[in-house]
Length: 200
Image 1 (cartoon, rainbow, N blue to C red):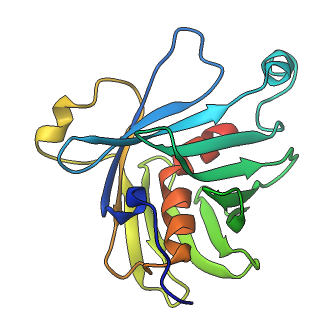
Image 2 (tube, rainbow, N blue to C red; image 1 turned 180 degrees about the horizontal axis):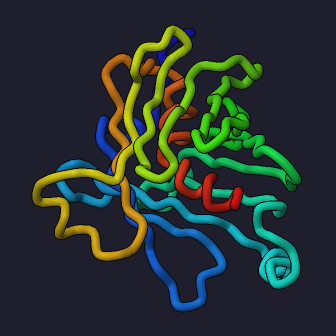
């Protein structure tokens, strides 16, 4: 697969994600920082009014959800969308133009979350394996090579940036492909917190 002109958001190797807490929280919203503590984007869940009403009667794990990953100027660089489901999540990843470029498939594995990240044709390009309680996840390619990590552990000056509840770090290794696949892999990794939340 050839090189792609990736949006600036996907040129980083470290993403620090911090949840924004609202008084009446019907949707998930996160700020995204680089390793220097500079905000580089936002992740925003879009929740129609009728969803808010349905959540009073139906588990949100059944309802569809949409998450937009945005640059600081509000340009959408990727979207993940899940249709209504009664079992394991199957999620579509779209680029900034709304074109499907991949997906996330939640595979059943007792006490050990397993997610497949796929390309637009449904071929597996990466896996996210982890420990639910410790919140340690590793991203692998199809050959078992490590592409990145998702953890709630970090050190240094950035601790002062984070002031709210859920916060975690996504590290992307140099082995990650620098083409359209990287959008799917990074989008899948940095939204895994919300995917797990909305699946509960």
